[in-house]
Image 1 (cartoon, rainbow, N blue to C red):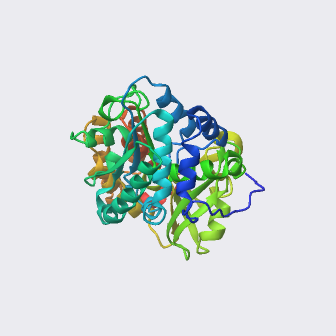
Image 2 (image 1 turned 30 degrees about the vertical axis):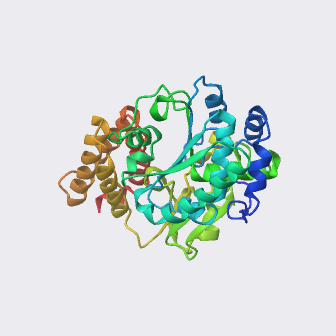
Image 3 (image 1 turned 60 degrees about the vertical axis):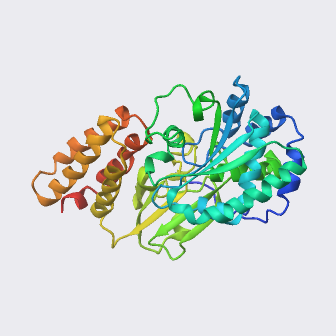
Length: 394
């Protein structure tokens, strides 16, 4: 794939937030339908990785008939390789709080929660201080909206929205069957909008500058900018806000060390792309429009020639085996068998053809696991085994 895209930086998320009071007071005086239309026009998609249209999510919850509704900020940033949400909450918390309050105005909710990753306990004091200041201003403008922090307990599965609801309700963190969806039956069985931290920060940008300013960034089907957590074999580790639509070749030219042989797009649950496919792979939600297109929650891990892809896959599978909630058999047993299988092949106890059986097992997990954890194991497993098969054997 050849593109005319050039890597472009953006600077909206971490811009000064001193005008949050103005943005809040202005937008709560607009009609819910007007705000929904603005979000839909912007074509903002969820920045947690799934890419569901944010405007549509708000619209469905606004249309749900119930006196009690909730707004939840998913700050359970547990995907390996991503560390952007904690920076947003540390540096520009009022953008997130403002977006939650505007969402409450749109759907008719008076309560909001920030589900904070257990390992981010250190953020709680300053975040509570910001919430106190925010709620004081809400009283001044007669806005009835409360925000509370709910601390997670360190379970990766609780990043999945329905497992998060279960956790908040005092139950074991396990995914629910869908439907019903959160827009009609979420937290406490009530209509709920649940958005990722970064998604809410982008809605602040849209409500401040207008939908067109956001829409003009990125490319078709992948509008706007995105925060990327860059790590691994790179001379430029850190967090960068870039427009969507870049090719992976553009990304590696900017952040690689000159010897990048693969990039893990989207963390352990994402895809590993080998060097030969950098130029044909785009970052975004374009689908077949531009060849291979991979969405990402933000994690971008670069690996150079010194890295063993077997060790990388072994590490991922150890992680998935540990974090599987155990509720469904495909994930509970599948993660263990994939890990045992690659170790057996590496030791010579199984022949190379056994990898094909493991690939079929991963495919079965993709179709039969109950939630995104078990379904996504096949992403990294298949992409690593298929592209670096020799490193699984020798």
